[in-house]
Amino acid sequence: MVLFTLLGVCLIGVAVVLNVGWIVLNWRRLVPLAVGIPFFLLLIAGVALNTVFLVREVRRNERHDAFLSAVTHELKTPLASIRLYLETLQRRPMEDAQRSEFYERMLEDSDRLLATVEQVLKAGEVGQRARSHVRVPVEIRALVEDCIRMTRARHHLDESAIALDVEPATLPMMVRGDPEELQTALLNILNNAVKYSPNGVEIRVTLRGEHDAWVRVSVTDRGIGIPAAHLKRIFRRFYRVPVRAVLRTKGTGLGLYLVRTIARQHGGDATAESAGEGRGATVSLQLPRILTPLAERD
Image 1: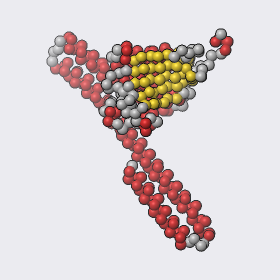
Image 2: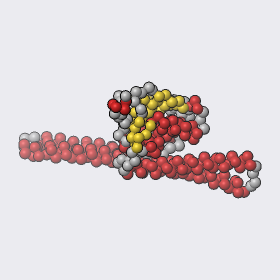
Image 3: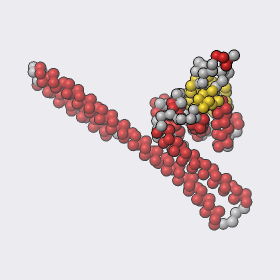
Image 4: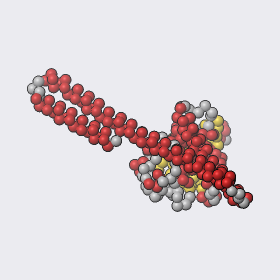
């Protein structure tokens, strides 16, 4: 990327020098001067665009390579673990308690493997269609509570690790959408909050209505945080923040991409806020609320 950038800058510099020399030599000849300057501007624009496209392509390839490496690790590690436990069970007799422990660990590894495969498949699925065809009314509070219970069970968390705050609302918090996809988005946000809280999980989930037209679910953690320069980039596909604490944590770079894609397919959006590294982060999912007719409010 640095090579292409330097090459583009050098080419622009050479073009500027040549054009300035050409103008100095022909400043008294109006026709060549009038024709040459527009062509020079087009040349500069072409070189600049070519450099931008090259840099973007290099970055895209880097993200793809990082994604392949992460997915390979996420697939290989649980498979190797399951194989090791199976070989151990096959080679020597074991007590029932230890055998049960091995079975439990193999189930956890298989769940992890299945979660990785489902995330990759879901990313390809949501990227290929503009909107989900399944649209039903969904009570967002019940969905959030289910997702919190699933996250606690998946990560073996205490009930106090994830707190839910529901702000009073005059209207029911109903949205129209695909319950399965909305659940995927919420689970990804919660799983990220748990995963990037290495020093203890303390998560607050806030559910509130906004201007009687929107429902916002905000998940706040006290984890490793997000540098300000990366707050908008984290929703890109395959993107992972190039910070050591993040890169040490297992992931594919698809979770938040799925969250924003699903939110926008439902007419909403996803945003992230953070005070910086080591100061936690808040990821919010905003969805349009089903407007209740005035007759029903009474």
